[in-house]
Length: 268
Image 1 (cartoon, rainbow, N blue to C red):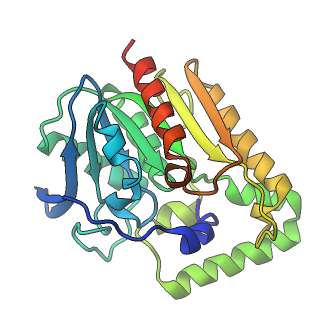
Image 2 (cartoon, rainbow, N blue to C red; image 1 turned 60 degrees about the horizontal axis):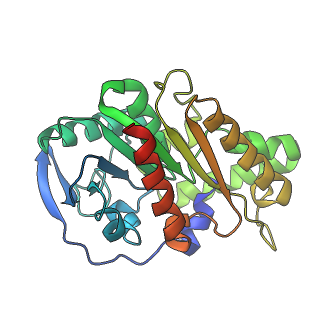
């Protein structure tokens, strides 16, 4: 969700030192790390341009329970820099290729944050034979602007136009196609019947900078993701009022607990 990147500008964590390696996947070099062991394989998809350090606050906890893979998408972290625009389809294909190069044979439990949810949902729809379960943490959505427009169409159009101009001024991210084209994302039932958990923030802002951050919009955001998750026979929504866009940093114990619960549901 592009509007939510305003949060990220102010809350993006400092890059942590990680024991990353690099591997060739097609024409690109991909930064990654693999640790842990167990029946489940967790595959972590970072948000925005964060790279694999997006998971620094919970990675060492997760590796106690499973084999965990985190990586930086092309254009992020220490992976190959690019100038072209990638779509979620491009990134999903890249994730599949990385798993193949790493020799991952079975299904993965896909954990994604923010923009990474675009990639994860696309991956789940395109490669259902490779996914055991899905968790989306503060997922971006093509419906963010719809929420704004439903509250105040005239003001929303002005705010959306300004945010888009700011994006252009700051340079278009690799994810530009997904952020602003607002193409429909894979939805239930395009994604297989797998355990799904969505963690979304409904924490209120004292001085909301945009319509999207008003109390009413936050409630609508929570309802949107609750409805999406509950459309799955094994879906679950977890709404939090204790953190904004980075619950894995602000509430790491809660996220780890939900990941373990998801693993249990995925391997029954």
